[in-house]
Image (tube, rainbow, N blue to C red; front, side, top):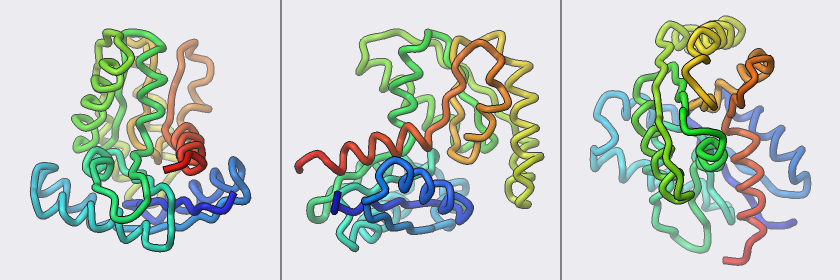
Length: 220
């Protein structure tokens, strides 16, 4: 497989995760990473409807594709909807990492618990879940769980406490859910700690990379 896959991240910590996933799923695929922490930081301040932010996200997606990528994937759930709407400049396809997860979640049961540590992620993810449900012709009942106390751990680079804080809160709220959606890519390790819940706990990285690889292999 010769076509390149590019990722647009809003945190450097995501690069090793997605490099590993891509190499496991499609070892022959050339992969490129672009990190733009400013896009998430600004989205939290100006909001997702800000025209300047929209333009910058689209420009960042095109820049990520400039190395010849067939598919550019935004791994940030907050700006994912903006990134997905990028008009192609050339032959690349724009994608958000969490759409594959949402498509699976809406088929797992009507009560979808959306978990985030960052408030700006909740509304875009709920909109995505509702979009996926409409596309699948099913009815869902999205519910939100914001674990604000976890985010400072992530910002401090304390991944262990970040994941533990999320796991505790999700376990306490799991009775009101048929499926749990981990709205931020950084949350993926939580799923292993909650394997005993008896319901699906879905994260975006692996599902999203699998879809991106398949999309890269699809003729334009």
